[in-house]
Length: 517
Image 1: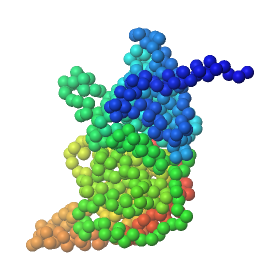
Image 2: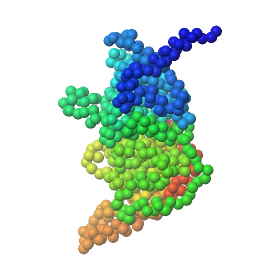
Image 3: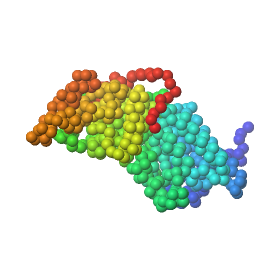
Image 4: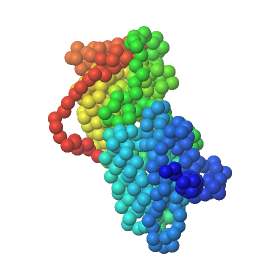
């Protein structure tokens, strides 16, 4: 029996109403402000015609405070699966045109269902957050909904990549779902994220502040470190999502999307020999090193504006996806501090969860000295780096470019902390501490008697470097596998990656380790 014309017309009417969300006027008003609708974002993210929606006809269950009988299409969120570069990805996009994108029970159930689908299918999750928060009219039921979402964020962590885009308001408990995901992208000027707003802060503490001061993209990128990327527009945010996904496997059982070249390129790069300044104390930009190591244009820096003394990000070397952990001599001389340790440890653990090899570029004089660092818990934070590397089983290649002193030498993945290959440049200094500091301790009496203390200190420091800090000393004791010219670095890393892609390492059975948080 053919389907009736009336049934088809009713379906089309319901579809059209659901797709419009809060209505064309509200959508037009957003467009006039330069804001996209929930569906605009998904249409830009996915290949045309590939989005399969889940729950278009969902309806809210609010019955109090005048909500009964109100139409909230899709319960203020669009969910489904589509294709990005021929790979399936699950996504949700909160619809601010419907009840301010507020989360009610069906809204939460839709989020839970799409996350469950992502877990079972082994596909990444992308979420566009644009919501006024919990739907007050549903009370504790809305809070329960957030709990269901948070629980799934944790369950999916380390199983499939999770990416959040803050595309509008994201306040109170709503902020914790993005915080539990792997990467957060925030749109400058069009979004805000905080736990307590200015009014609450002023009411409780008496302190006057603004949304920009506590919740803007720039604050979270530069100060709090809560986010990983700042987008200048809606389209820019989508472009960052797509580029980020191009480095990530669909799940923890799949290999990263390597594009392995047929042959290993072992050619030298003479320009690399000119990067280090003549003075061991003069700064240089480690990004110049990274950009010479990676395939052209493939470096994607993560958390660029936070803890700038540490550079992390993704790239490809001879087509192989890698993660970089690099000291930045231009900032705080490349010292490890509280924020850099947190930034590095988190990125290391992500790479390990998804099978991405790690390249460590080392020029570290130590942990940053200071009362603020000590009182702030640098011991605990620095230990995160040690724990992260010690727990990591993916291939790890360490290049000691210049200084590698003390505990920071270990915290940047020495051979004893699990590095599979350690290579040093000829100018590398590997020691318990810098030569000048060591001389002041070891030769205090000699220096006090010297006629020219400065000249004698310099002489002793040179002797100390030659006898104790030379890379050949470490190579002789097998702490370093080889000493190489900087120009050989890309070729040697390429070769090492090929031999390490088949690496398998097992650990003693346990539920999980107890990282010093």
